[in-house]
Length: 163
Image (cartoon, rainbow, N blue to C red; front, top):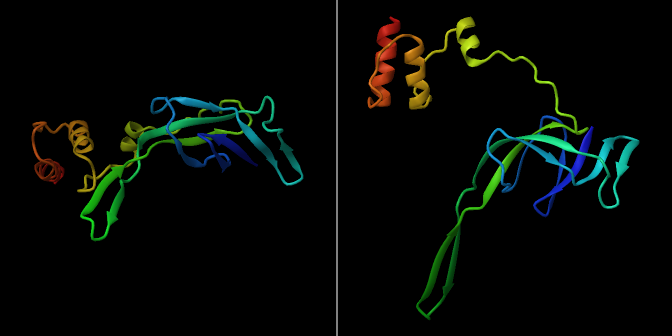
């Protein structure tokens, strides 16, 4: 099943589980969002088409993150006239994960949390982890590390304690 929604002056084809990047919305990370401008909803021969929107149709989503896109450089230049103008722009966006197409908030499945997962299988420290994650891992293993320590020092302390 899929839907075509409109937000931010653009149209998006979505289905459950999709993560889409839309124009900036004024909602916080992790908040649920309800998109009610649904143009098309259904699949196969069971498609509803709105005029322009389908009444009562809602798409439920959760905000994954708010951020800014990569910088676009605008460079204006006129030859032989000593005119150069450099300007940059970063477009703000909101990333949304589509939870359900029928407008009902889905029942949350009880997924194992990070604490439960660490009890089942040991998490190994590696250089690709962020400093905060390494500090949390060290704290979970009972290793005392100064929060001002560098990432390399934290990794070394965790590795030496695990041997």
